[in-house]
Amino acid sequence: MKKYSRFLLVLAMCCLVAACARRGNVMQAPEQVPVDSLKRTGVITEKTLDAQTAGLEHPPVWRVESGANKLENIYFDFDRYFIRADQTAVLERNAAILKDVGNRHISVEGNCDDRGTIEYNIALGQKRAEEVRGYYIRLGVPGYRINAISYGEEHQVCTEATEACWRQNRRVDTKF
Image 1 (cartoon, rainbow, N blue to C red):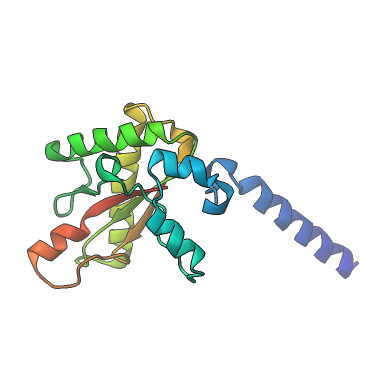
Image 2 (image 1 turned 90 degrees about the horizontal axis):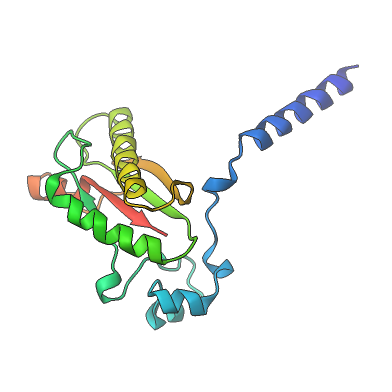
């Protein structure tokens, strides 16, 4: 009887995990995307291909790299998650690129400076990512392609305790 109960418990857990999985948030691995289409849209260049084929353990992030097609970060004020007026043009440029790259999945990653608690920064980063995701959707990027995630203060680009440095960390990155 004990074995039967354990089996049912494991089966129920597997069903629960399978039911909670959402196919819309699954990111497509770069090797599953035809290289020719990535070159054509400017997502990769010969430089990223060379690094990929060099057998690097951690290949570069697949981001738009060519000239006018570069995705830009969205920056926020301290302790705020509302999109600033000066960032709307950046969002519009990014949305135009995102609409042109087909059905690729997009990750919108919220980041914070290192002031505040870890929990607070995770929540603030998530609100920032959700705001940017909503803005992209209003600009015509299909919502099922966009996954919003928060890294809080974990992915800082600058670690000095200055306002200029903190300003760089209060951002949302958009990646493929």
